[in-house]
Picture 1 (cartoon, one colour):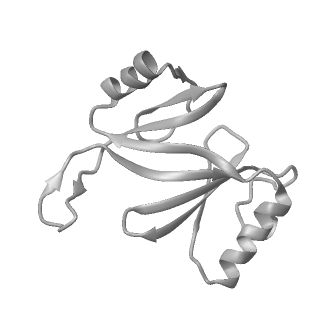
Picture 2 (cartoon, one colour):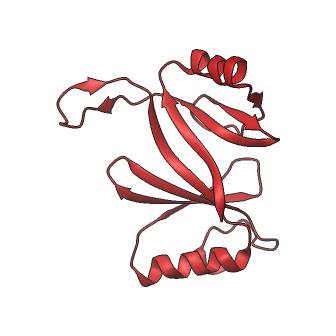
Picture 3 (cartoon, helix red, strand yellow):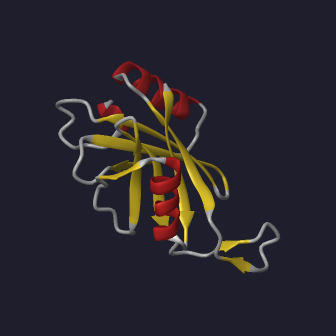
Length: 141
């Protein structure tokens, strides 16, 4: 398993993109057609930073004031092998950890999201196994 990407949610989408592109030196590249605007910024040919337009304001730690501030939304790990993916799903089931599966639009990848606590999400992503037929059932892995 390796770190795959970090997702930053920001109300300043274009200026944040310019920072990562013009200052950091990442390349703005292809991104699946998700329902919310954003950019994928590439390092060494891989999308390392995902920027997402802040469509929902964040709450302060006390829960009172509404903030519209950039935040790290989630961290993602790439799972390379089907064996490793199945083992992960089995461990989640054995420990009764709830998760959500999603298919990345216009790709052959599947995502698994675990909410550890409010506002703390870990994503696991892998290439969809050949012959899975688009099924996102954990039994297909």
